[in-house]
Image (cartoon, rainbow, N blue to C red; front, side, top):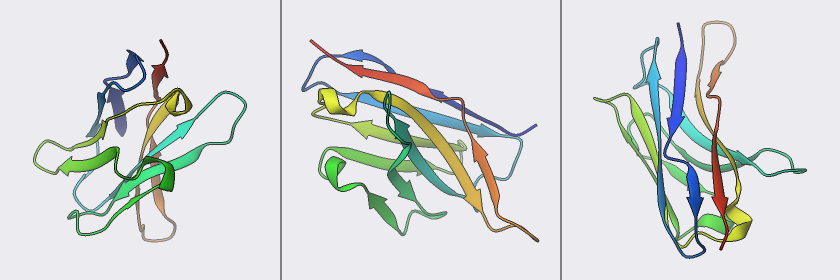
Length: 120
């Protein structure tokens, strides 16, 4: 059974830090591009960061560049999102996504999400 389980969300004050983790199971993790998305209330889901299978290519949404860092540990089947200098606009549910080319269509898995709230 394919599972992506996010953890590490919570309530943090502006300027604070959190590290999210997404543990994958039920599929071979290393070939997948891993991405973090977020969705704030009343807004569309948006891509925050992505990292390719070996970590050679990493992308960030402009608003998080210099504050967030995505990384992966293929031995632990886990992807991380280190978030620093958090601001109220970062408040959202953060989702983990795994995607890879399949034999006939893309393979695309999602986690259930973890809430991040930035507030004083």
